[in-house]
Amino acid sequence: MIHTLIEKIQKTHAPIVVGLDPMLSYVPQHILDKAFAEFGETPEGAAEAIWKYNKGIIDAVYDLIPAVKPQIAMYEQFGIEGLKAFQKTVDYCHEKGLVVIGDVKRGDIGSTSAAYATGHLGKVQIGSKAFSTFNEDFATVNPYLGTDGIKPFVDVCKEEKKGLFILVKTSNPSSGEFQDRLIDGRPLYEYVGEKVAQWGADCMGDSYSYIGAVVGATYPKQGEILRKLMPKSFILVPGYGAQGGKGADLVHFFNDDGLGAIVNSSRGIIAAYKQEQYASFGALNYADASRQAVVDMIADIDGALQAAK
Image 1 (cartoon, rainbow, N blue to C red):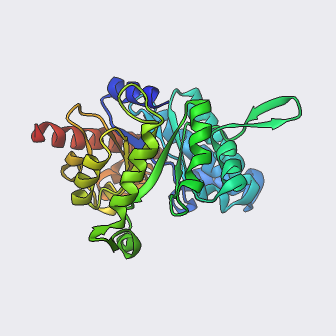
Image 2 (cartoon, rainbow, N blue to C red; image 1 turned 60 degrees about the horizontal axis):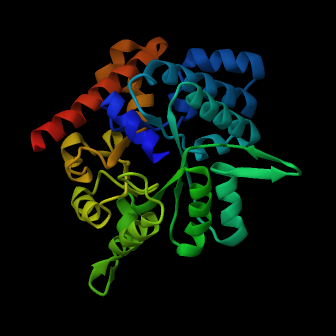
């Protein structure tokens, strides 16, 4: 799947991923009204609103981007109905030819980790038949439990030719409470980065590994260090836009070939119509605002990369 991701990045000239992380407060009133009229102010109504909201955005941007990243918690909060909306979103993105990065941040060991890997990336055996369930192309994984937690995912990735993005240096302000702690004079995130490179060496594509890393745009200096520690790992970069990251911060996340990183923006795109810059589109044209935000993000990142050459 890393080959597919790279091909789509090269085709679109857009090393970006749209985070489909919907909150009800993002959904325009006309979509809420229609969903609630049909299903009531219920989890089913909320899930329907989120699905229709997602569909509008996907229809508006799918030709511009290589990938999407739905965050499962935004769907799980509505229970089973929310998970149905998550599944509809994943399936529809695949219909539109998009790579799907399941932002599930799983982290466990043994049979539990294997079950998570099967559910999100693999096939579950039921009697004589095997079924793909959530069927994302990549999943985000928490490495805190060590190799015991990662190996079951790696095994499924090898079998299904899918991939991982492992949390290394996250974009949130308190990430340093643990990730920056010094061990023998070096921060913990460097050791995690080295393990990602080690795990990835056993899952190589033509030029990049199926095993990537998550490194926040809000920490560009750390990103530069980690890029050198993980030369063959693709880096998923959250923190662009709403969290403060900008194109100029991202240059060192990329390799000299112009590849090696994919940058995420979530509410900066999906809730663009709520921003002053795109307010003229209005709530009825929220998806058009999202499309313009994607165009502007592509230009920002491309301009930064060109200036760095």
